[in-house]
Image 1 (cartoon, rainbow, N blue to C red):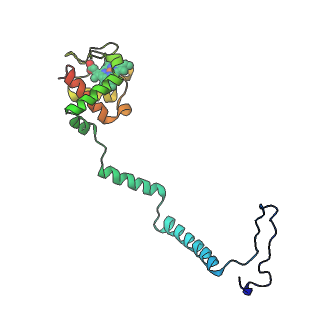
Image 2 (spheres, rainbow, N blue to C red):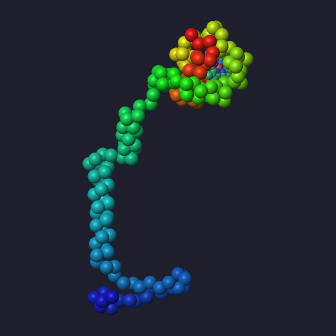
Image 3 (cartoon, protein in one colour):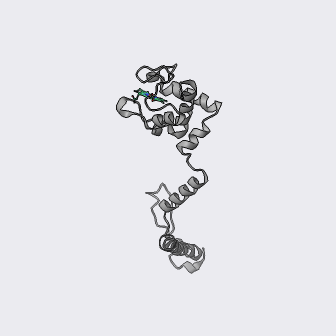
Length: 172
Ligand code: HEC
């Protein structure tokens, strides 16, 4: 330390008692340090003005833009796309698993029905085409006890289980 800091140079503040014996000098901060400190304040204010008022951006707006870009790049498959993609043996096998986990309680392991109707015969309350089966699983028939599975399973799993029922049951 040089003498330019004045007569108070290296005066000890004397809180060693409170601070586990750590002493502190009461010296001036170095000019370069103060310069950086004030510069960071100026940059911070400038950045805030630019961010909010010039670019008019916000974290919420950036999030929305990113989500929109992701949706454009990887579009959420529509129910029809999911249905078209489900027509293969792996999907139908996955559909069988989904059926075993969620549907056997009402439609029986061999799809012949119980609480819910038989899915293997030619009688269909809501239509027996693949699209019909997919629609009734997605939307359900809540007043009759058939759940609305669309939001629970999502379009892909619904399409898989519909493809399984259409193939294994009496689909038309
Ligand atoms: C809590 C019992 C219950 C569960 C669990 C259930 N269902 Fe159903 N399901 C029903 C009932 C009851 C109906 C008849 C609705 C009606 O009468 O309109 C039905 C109808 C259906 C139909 C239409 C049948 C037709 O004749 O048109 C399909 C397809 C179907 N369910 C598939 C499924 C699938 C797939 C699952 C599993 C993801 C499932 N269900 C789980 C009770 C259930």
